[in-house]
Length: 408
Picture: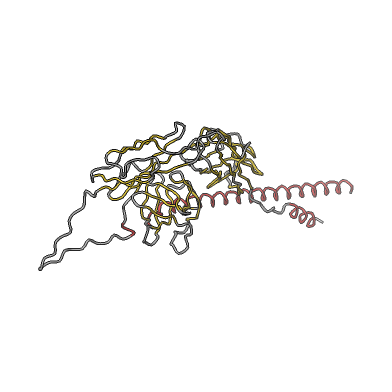
């Protein structure tokens, strides 16, 4: 009988399988169609089957079509990328809503997506997440002006060739090797139109493309471009051959030795996406055949106002740098590194990923320790429950024998 009681108690106290908590991240708004220049509200919604301790993610958007107006204290950033951080110091709950206000700048579709989303419960354990995107269409007001032309365009130093005309969109100029930047004055024909100038602050030897984008009141856009050709101040004449000695050839640079960096712009042309600085590169969407380092995953990132395909550590758009596969006209494609902190691009060197891998190792170690801690707590609880059960059985048997002795 005693054995049966102990067996029953042990069966009742068998450990239960622990399932990880799950959560959901999505966006909501009162209207999915807005007009140019309209301010509208978007909520980032968090839900979980347990209390939310911490949450973080990045929200990427096209800064040419959308501007961040204001939001909750947990939202920081601008220029096409927002970071949302919710900390455990705030009141814990199983659902939260984070307010953000935006202003529509130009027509088109805007996709709101939570990138690199991470959620933890109040004990610091990770919560598995599902996400839903939100698409908002920006339309032009019915009476909005569609004029996206320039009234005047001037540069200094240099002279535009051909002379400026509102219906001519491509120009060239030449500057000396000492020129590091140029001044651009661009005035829209319509006072309600907006003008953006890109690529004029960093002029390198060779060809540089300065882009002037005019956005009309109704959101339509027109681009003007000026190709600035700068002389190379460091150019030296090729040594003259002599009968007794041949000139020493200049060695070709290798991909791992490349240290050139370019200021970045992005644009679309003939159905393809391009990234431009001193040189123009086509962005390769499909990485097949190119060596992408382990741990880098395909994701989307807004660079210079355009959402492009990149490869980031663990698909994290919040990484300090990302990789792109780029191809220059007439050359083979290669992997390049885009540095988000200073907005520059350079040929990728494998040694660059050492620090990131170290950080990943630390994160994995922390998760491992949290799991061991949770397993230890579960085991301790089971042991205490077993001791309590044995004590209860002993008490029952003691009472039983005391009553038997009294009856005798």
